[in-house]
Image (cartoon, rainbow, N blue to C red; front, side, top):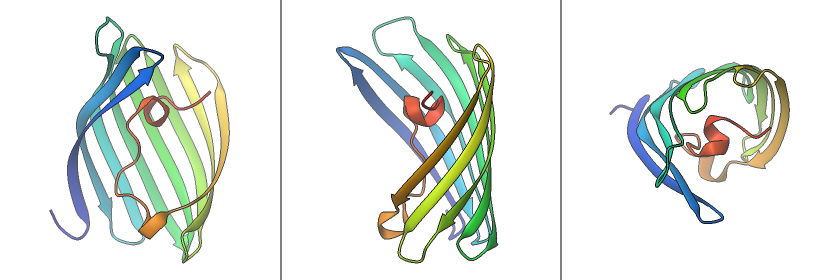
Length: 142
């Protein structure tokens, strides 16, 4: 849409040992260099079954200084999984694309626990515009 705002749609399938699950929906991203954010709304479902939930995700980032950002996230699902996730974290990224990210997330409703994660990686070509919208990208790994 503009240099700062991007919109998209997504559709993906996961094959879990013969059971096919997938997600579909709409997403938008904003990035002005210092402030960034994503909003996604969609549905995750077993393609041939009764397991399904709707989800909404909001992710935000604020760059404190070049390469160092604080992060926040909110995810809400309803249906077969009723989950609320609130997270806060930090990310450091070098100009070459190497990054380290740490998050603390509090899960509520169907799951009541905290998840602490640490990720190290490389963002090829500056990374992707949108985050993953598969199971790990919506509910997370726990």
